[in-house]
Amino acid sequence: MTDCGCQLEAEGDAQRATLRVVLAINAAMFVVEIVSGVLASSTGLIADSLDMLADASVYAISLYAVGRAANIRRNAATASGVLQLALGCGVLIEALRRFIGGGEPIGVAMMAMGCVALIANSFCLWLIAKHKSGDVNFRASYIFSANDVIANIGVIVSGLIVKVSGSQIPDLVIGILIASVVVRGGIRILSMARSSEETS
Image (tube, rainbow, N blue to C red; front, side, top):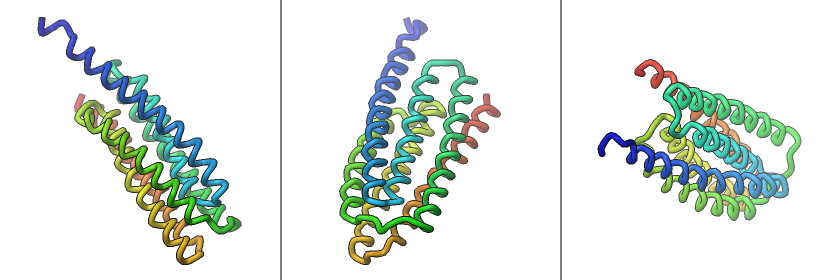
């Protein structure tokens, strides 16, 4: 009964379950972080919240693609990459707006939310790592989650510097760096999708 497809079906169910969990976590964290970022006047937190929104959208697209034909999975990965690029550019625009007319960020709030987001993203990374050898969408999801963990550490560190120095510059810098990571991730996913198409 090795050709019954039971193993593939079970693997697909496990992937869907993982994607539902990380989708729910990222959607919830987007709401929490965007509110906290606005209240704390933090570009870093707002950038990280938009990154969470991008990831939630990517996980939703990946959830749709699980178990479907290879061309659908590739198209889903391409859509994920384009979305990452768009939101990354949005974060850069927000950082510029904050630089021109934003108030001083609250360092303690940045550190607190950065720690919460770090815990959430570390858990997501642990879940997705079990499937990172899967198709292009799961490899993309792994990249996003790993980037998120790095971004969260950056928010915590910049929050500490803001708290000590009283300057908004570290917050703006981390916001721009997060945007750069999001854009780079989008480009990488588009490249992976293109390579997948060429080798199929």
